[in-house]
Figure 1 (tube, each protein chain N blue to C red):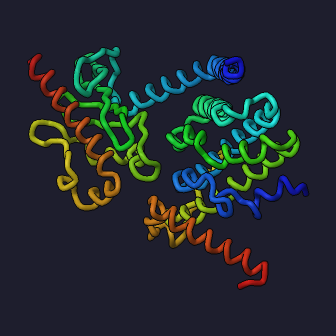
Figure 2: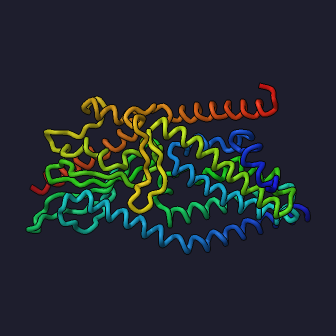
Figure 3: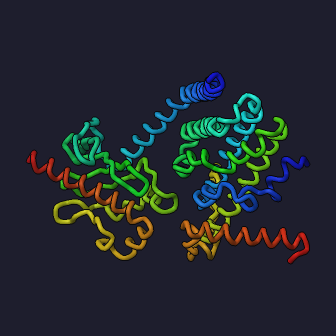
Length: 207
Length: 187
């Protein structure tokens, strides 16, 4: 597997290692389905912005590169917002204010500035996919922890007779409500980050 | 100077291309978004009508009420009013729709467009949220606007989203008052 692709998933995971994009990671990790929807939006925007920035890297004047990146990213976010509102209104309602906030997701601007503006188109695409998928996995992991502990359910997309909600017996009657509140998001991220630190240390034989 | 123009020109070009792309996509999605919104409104009107016939939309000049639809029973007699209202929530303006009987008591209500917090204030979108207000609003049974006016189990349910609750309750109370005034004027 290509290193540019795999690094974003584990070694340089944007949420747990680079600590980028924590605002949506705190905000939309209450339900698994929202995390997946947000992740899909971020993958699309990151892919689009990395492609544009990589193609335009010789055209964009260095002095105005940040405004240029923001315009490009904001355009893709607006596209996601309009398409989502038109074709997936329920998801749009749930994500609410967090969709426009993809613009200021530092994971995306960070990749445009640190990677796509210095690398080839192919590597930028791989980087965007890896980082996007890494972000989605991280967000989904937090959402799983929060939703299972905080509500005792796992909410996925409803298909046919399956309404999309899996109930966990025992937890649904007595959930730890704190995990569905914002404080729970911080707790969940903190413990997961500690876990990943411990993992990477023991891999290096330091633990 | 020349460098400045060149830099500015390039930035302007990027913006122009971006704006054009957005305009094209907007042309595709705008009608669909409008259609979704109308469908949601129609469905909500049906849900709060209590089974009565829904009359035509009227605009209303009022602090919170924007539109009204009269309700008629099978004989064509006035049976109530549906009001569309805007109220302030935790995340800005909320759109409410509520059906009232002629005495001002609430048939039921729905929360439409809002920016409330998912998991907390957003729960008010559920139909069962409005059960605590149903039947309230006539002159001898006011709409509960404070948490301590609710039975204990219902008060617990709005904990964590008090501002959403107040916004909805005050909107519904203003609506009930409006209905009572209207009917008072006419009879």
